[in-house]
Amino acid sequence: MSLDSVSNGVAYWLALFGVYFGVGYLMWASAAEKLFAGPIAMPAALAKTFSGTWIAKLVGVNFLWGTVGVLELLIVLVVLASIVRGEFMPSRSKSLLQVSLSLSLVLFSILSFGETITANFTGTLTEFTYFGVTILIMGLVSVLPPTRKAHWLTGGEAPATHEHETEEHAE
Image 1 (cartoon, rainbow, N blue to C red):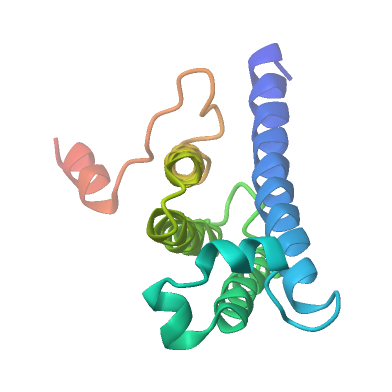
Image 2 (cartoon, rainbow, N blue to C red):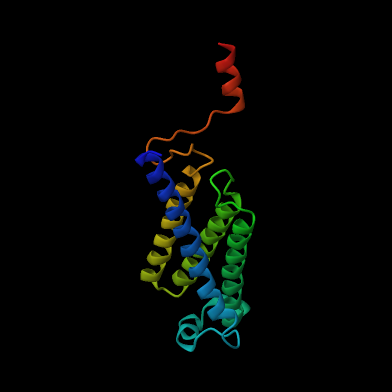
């Protein structure tokens, strides 16, 4: 086994562990705090920032808090479904993992919207940063095997499509 093979394998497993653990735990910790740590109620200081906004008047701050918690829990459930499905294996597509990351984009957009309507533009920038980093993570996941060959890190290329293989054999 070459050093390149070992480094590709180690990088693959560490990258996936980082994605699964990072997204899964972050969303679980947030969802659990909102949904399972007592009554579903937005903390008073945060509720105060939303008081007087049209969205708080329309649906209520506790409903907003619970909705964010449910979305975070949904992301965790999709991450778990990805694990159960075995998407962590190099030969398996990462479609559910990508769905969980896409749901994270929706969540960060909603949180950014909330920050913006309360005029917390620093918070909006933070959520925008999370959004952008999530896109980068989606890009990383999209170049992992099986999209790229097992030597994805040290010069892997996308596997040939069936049509391309057929054309090569015809030549």
